[in-house]
Amino acid sequence: MRPPAYLALSDGTIFEGEAAGHLPEEGVTSGEFVFNTALSGYQEVITDPSYAGQIITFTYPHVGNYGVTVLDDEATRPWCEGVVIRDLSDVSSNWRAEGDLEAFLRRHRLAAIVGVDTRALTRHLRLAGALPGAFGHAGREAVLDAARVATGTDGRDLVNTVSTTARYERGARGPHVVAIDYGIKATMVNQLAQRFRVTVVPASVTLDEIRALEPAGVFLSNGPGDPAALVHETSVVASLVGAVPIFGICLGHQLLAQAMGARTMKLPFGHHGSNHPVKDLATGRVEITAQNHNYAVAPESLTRGVVSHVNLNDGVIEGISSPEDRCFSVQYHPEAGPGPHDARYLFTRFVDLLGTEMRTV
Image: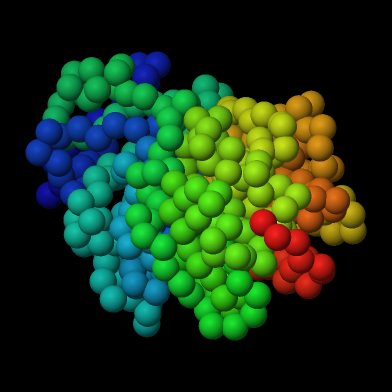
């Protein structure tokens, strides 16, 4: 029997449910509420470091059906603050399953609230935008009090809480690429390691440290939080633009844009899911993409480089390219864990870019 729980948003909206997963002693979990529209891949979503500081609402009603496996982890632990689920399955039915989702949540001390009307919650977030709030079993008033003082991701550097603290290497052949870890996903590292000799470095890396590694190219990873708060990281990327080929994904895309003089903005409720149509403006090809971001590049601020991809749902910039600087980036996730593989050609595009004449960083 699960204890009753409440979910409260900072605007005073209340939902009822039951506490599941880890039950924190204080009885309350706070964060910024967002919703994810993927039909599967809940484990990859939960372990994606880009969700640091956020509470994930799954719009798909049944979550946990096929259990969990270490093979689906995108990080060594979840970085989100908590999860909201309509119906958490008690039965795991899949040959790959090594356990059930609720045991996974307890093992990683991640709180959940279940039995919530996630359709109503999602509709509210679509209208009001991503909102800070809280949930838990501490009682209605305690949860409301926590929601009133909860904070979102605006102005927060969450990258240095999720980034690796020590560099490591993957892959054994191909050009040497330095991958800056702003919250890099395991699938992203795997895709790079299939094509390059990769050195993954912390987000706090300096320009001199990158130069000492003598890379043929630099990769900028995904990550959480507000890109405008990442002054050091933007400065390092700005010094690399034009000196070495660069490929950025998600937060890496935003940092590359900032490094080239553009600014970023917060979207009302962000893009979180595995079914977003994106058009490649050079080819006219439409890709179905996986996405996870709350911030985007402000169109009117982009004066260097060109827009390469756009979101067909709302026109948001989904990619930029600067051939003269030998760099490009996309807002969505070509490694797609979870999601379709339509955009994995972008890793090959990076291989081709590194095949051009090299310059010294």
